[in-house]
Image 1 (cartoon, rainbow, N blue to C red):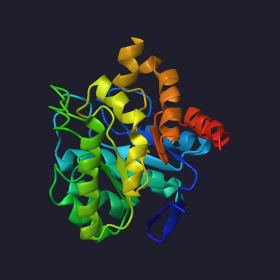
Image 2: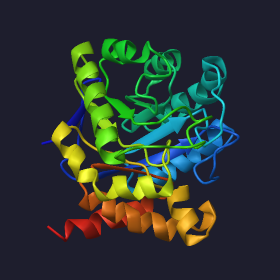
Image 3: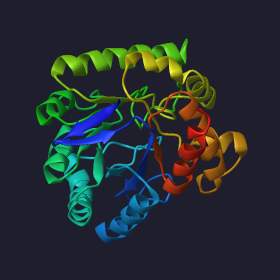
Image 4: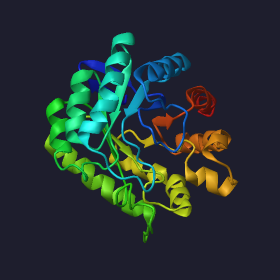
Length: 274
């Protein structure tokens, strides 16, 4: 059985789970799940947990295309009150810190977060992997070509699935050698990839199963949905739901979403296919 262990608590992943997105940012690409104050995010967190979210992913730095990196100090100012408030109100909730800064990760885990979710897999902050290993918490590592500021300038691959798999294989090995026990892999849809790259990767995502790590799929309301359908993120829920089903069929264990209720319905319907 797939499990995550953090601070002597176990989260089972034998059935896929939903990770709800909570953005303590002023500039994310989509408003739902976003608020500039802890009370607003606490209300959103309560609703997501009621709807069935197993994990809440809290981020203080937007990673949309073209976005510049921010300092750990600014990130901490945004997220620490949120983590503290949610941990106080919902002591049993699983909380993830969405950050590429080791300093932020350490403070967030000390405040009450359980998991580190790093879009750069330790490439932006070279101290991240050692920091996660020292804290002995699960680590989500993602593939990204470039940085948020540059990643969509001109993404290029000979074989996107093979290259993403090779990258994640090397990163998993490095994390294991550092002493990280629980590793989740994220192919990084929309991070340094064209629409065509994203669909090729999604269609072959099951090939990542050989890494023997739970797979996280973050497809929610992204441009790979909006561009083919000619809709804004606000009107991309139906497309998100469709692709979440594909992700489950391709072996995803975690769906990272803005819309928890709909993702839970996808997981329930998917269970009837087995």
